[in-house]
Image 1 (cartoon, rainbow, N blue to C red):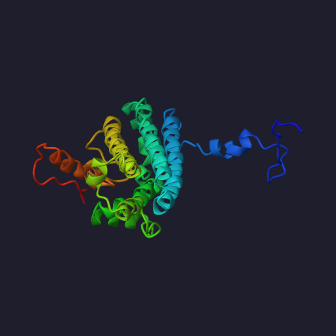
Image 2 (cartoon, one colour):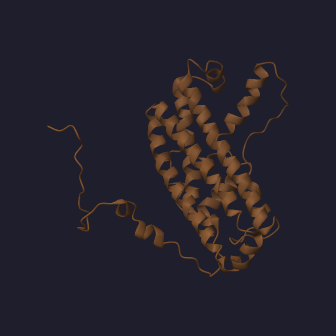
Image 3 (cartoon, rainbow, N blue to C red):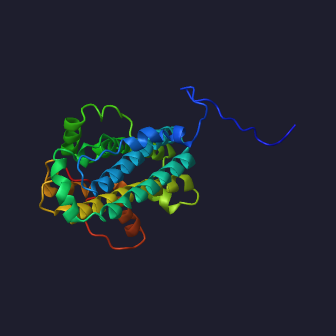
Length: 272
C-alpha cells in the first residue's frame, strides 16, 4: 500500500467538476462587490481598504468567540495564542492607514461629496468587536447610549464579554495582577494572558490615534465627517477608550512597590 496521500477533487454543491481556489474563496462574489459610486480613480483604493478592514473585523469577531470559550474553560495558553493573533491583525489593520494616505487630500475632496451619509461609524462589525471585548462596561453611559441608538440589541447579544471572562479567570486563581506580575514565572499563564490583553488595548490605542491622524490629513481636524459628526464630538472622545484600564493603572502600583515615585490620583478610566 502506498504511503502517499490520496488526492481528492470533490464536486462542489453546484455540481461543478472541480473544487478549486476560485470556488473555495468565492472570488467571483468577493471581487464583484467592489463597486465605486464615482468615476474618480482613487475611490477604488478607498473602497478596497475598507473592504479589507471589514474582512479582518470578521476574523477578529470569529476569534473573540473562541477566546471567550477558552477563558471560561481555563484553557489559558490557547486564549493567549488567539489574543496574540488579534494583536497582530490590529497591527496589520493599522498599516492600512498609510496606504490610504497615498490618496491625497485633494483627490479625496474631489469625490468625497458623493459619499455623504456613508461613514465608518456605520461599521457594525467594528462596534461588535468593541462590545465583545467589553468596552461598554467601562466607557460610560454616553458610549452605551450611542451603541444602543445605532445598533439596538447589540450589547444584549453579548452578555458575556472578554473583559468579564478575563477577570473571572484571575478571580478563580485567587491572584491579583500585582501578585501575578511579581511571581510571573510561576503564574506564567496568567502573566501572558494579562500581557496579551494589554497588547490588544495598546494596538487599539495606536489604531485610534493613527486613524485620527489620517482623518486630519485627508479632511482637516475641523471638518464634519460624512457620518455627520465633528472631530471633537466623536473621534476625540475615543482616544481614552480602554478595554482593560486596570492593566494600565496597576503599573503605577508595580512601579511604586519597587520604590518608584508615582503621582497621586492616577485616573485610568475611560471618558464618557
